[in-house]
Amino acid sequence: MSFQLQSVLITDEIDTQCVEILQKNGIQVVKNTKLTKEQLLTEIPKYDGLVVRSATKVTADVINAGTNLKIIGRAGTGVDNIDCDVATKRGIIVMNTPGGNTLSAAEHTCTLICALSRHIHRGDRAMKEEKWSERKVLMGNELYGKTLAIIGLGRIGKEVALRMQSFGMTTIGYDPIIPAEVSAEFNTEWMPLEKIWPLADYITVHTPLIPQTRNLINDQVFSVCKKGVKVVNVARGGIIEEAAIKRAIESGQCGGAGLDVFESEPPKDFTLAKMPQVLATPHLGASTTEAQKRVAVEIAEQFVDVVRGKSLFGAINAHAMTNALSPESRPWVVLGRKLGQVAAGLNPGNVENMQVTTYGPSLKQAGSYLSAAILSGLLQNSPAIGGGDSATLNLVNSPALAKQIGLNVKNTHEEAAPAPYTNVVSVIFNNGFRLSGTTSGGNALLIEVQGQQFSVPASLVDVALLFKGTGNPQLLPTVAGALANAGMCVSSLTVSVENDGQKWGVATFATPPTEKCLEVLKTIVNAAVLVTL
Image (cartoon, rainbow, N blue to C red; front, side):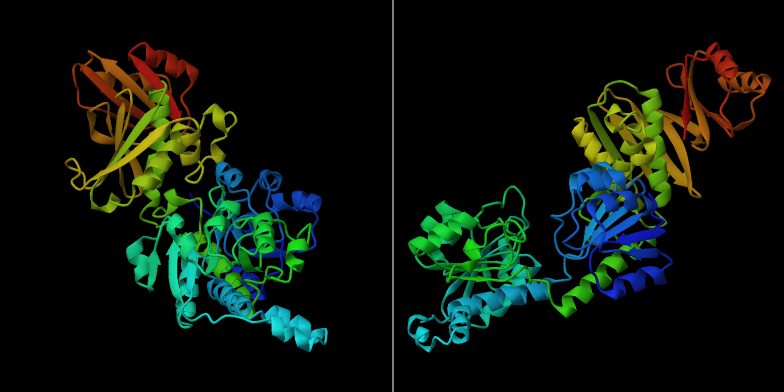
């Protein structure tokens, strides 16, 4: 799967370094931050890549209109404004810059915690309103000795922990991915959520907004927290239920909230933001000069790295491609796709399970991309992708399509390859049908069909005619003669070692054989299938 980006559209404000890096690497860039939705739908078919921040909503209709799109990049953390499911089905890589605004978001979180503890926002408001006497009701609390609960212990959560520990706070936290031994490295005790809530004086959230985290902190959670607990959200609006915050503040169960993000932005109702106990900012977590330059540079460099076949850092939907970009892996990707095409031609039955086994030291990390490549060839004519539009099926969307149609895929690896080969990939299906192949000099070679090995590997180039003969010891010269008599120019012709009286053969051509040729061939072989590779 290659990405030759020629043009990129940028639709949100972004530092000029993004444009400069892309242009320096031969990519044409158009920056237009004034496009309406209708104008974007008209413009997007012209571009291979799209770069956005938060303002542009990359919805399903935008993605479907982008008939040439290969990559969508968000200069920032998260991809909430991009329909990743539709992009994946279209085979479009979606990227973000997961580390670009880490420090800015962490610092903003710490700022809100400190300000809440001493009612800084209310004190500032009192001074502007010339209400010096307000100081009597603005008694705060030290952070020293208090417990900060961090929900989400990734990059930002870790940085928040390290900074707030310097105030003497005890940090505890939860993350479904980060284990206890990792969080212990930055002095944060991992706990299940139900144990965290009663211990926390402050709670800050640093998770993506997904179904599992929407309204994660709600009325029920507030009810088991300490009275007066304070909450902070610099991640995504909706992780802490806004209506629950309001109710908890009104009842005194919540002592204050620092909110930088909201369920809808801008908020449709500013009632919560206007509450005295709420310190609200208009999504400023990443709004620093340093962060904006960092994410602009990073998204541009990530695009360039993909074009160069160097890295897929930041991609959130292209796991199968992680090890597939190097020049050494590309012939294997081609082989995988061709094995899938051959399997589709020879084994058209209902496929429910597929096991891909890689052999040899060079393929130890190749299972995921080879299985995706095989799927891209196997499923190219599947009705699920709209009548066999093979150009839209690649390493990004073929695993998703397999999952959609209920095809289970298993990857295994063995160090020693079958002699005389160094590296081999084999695929076997639930009905026992099996193919194996290897590469040589960048060429894809078929070495086995149904347990029958070819004495000379069959080259999978151009157009391949696969045939099976039974009880004919002279199968090779018989087929060669028939093809010659039909006026066909054969690129290569090989047959397998005989097994139980059967032989498999492969003939390749620069141009497809005629119908007359196929009819003649079918009179001397048991089965013949033409595959365009």
